[in-house]
Length: 296
Image (cartoon, rainbow, N blue to C red; front, top):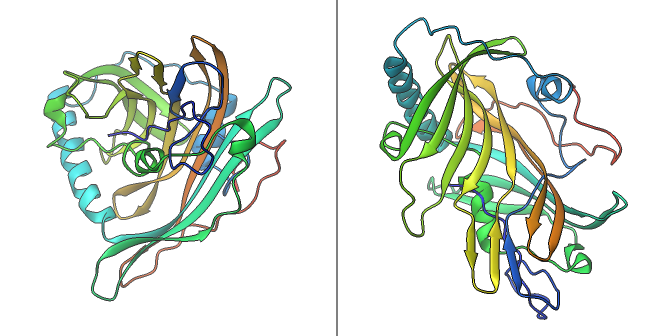
C-alpha cells in the first residue's frame, strides 16, 4: 500500500531495477523527496514548511469511533470517484551529494487517461534521459508502482480492519480545523505494503486532507537493505466533498550499514478531469532548484 523506491547493487546499466553501484552488498531502498519538480505546493503544504501548529488534546465533537467509520466511508467513496478521473502526474527523484548538489535525477510526466471504451491507462508524455545512473541508480517498476499505490494513501472501510487508528488530538492546518490520528498496521502480512504514520481529517466533512509517514516494513536481508523514507501527501478539495491528492514531498537521509544516502522526491498530481467532464486544478511548472514550494 505504499510506493517503495528501490536501489540495489549491480553493474548492469539499463536494468529495470534501481541500482546503487557500489563494491558492497546490495542496498535496496525507497526514495526521498525532490526539489523543483512540478507545480507549487498547495497553500497548506507551503505553510507547513515554515510553521508547526501545536496539537491540542481537545476531545472530538463526536465519538472517535464514529469519526473513524465516517472518514472510512468517505475514503471508500473517494477511491471509487478518483478511479473515474484523468490527471497529470509529474514525478521527480534526485540523489543529493555531500555538497547539497543534485548528483542524479529521474523525471517523468504522465497522463492518466481512458480509452474510448473506458479502460484506464498511463501515457508517458515527458521522460528526459535519466541521470540517476551517474549517481549509481536507475528506478525499478516497483518504485513506480509505489508512487501509484502508497504515497496517495487512502484508508477505506475495507482497509480499516488492517490498522490500529489512535486519536491524537486537534490541529489547525492552514484554514482547516482537523482531527489528528496515528495509524499503524496491526499485522505485517508477507508481500504486503502498509502505511505507518499520521493522518489529518477535516472536522467538518471528515475527509483525510494530509498524511505524513512511510511505507512499511523496511526489509533487511542478507546482502540487501530495503529502507523507506518519510513523506508528506497533501490533498485539495477538487469537487464536492472529495479531497484529491495533489502534492507529495519527501526529503530524507536513509541510513544504511555502508553509510547515509540523501534522497529527494516530489510527486505532483494536476489537471484532474472527470471522464467526460473537465475540472482543472493547474498545470505543472518548473521551480528553480533554490526555491521551495510556495503558494501560487
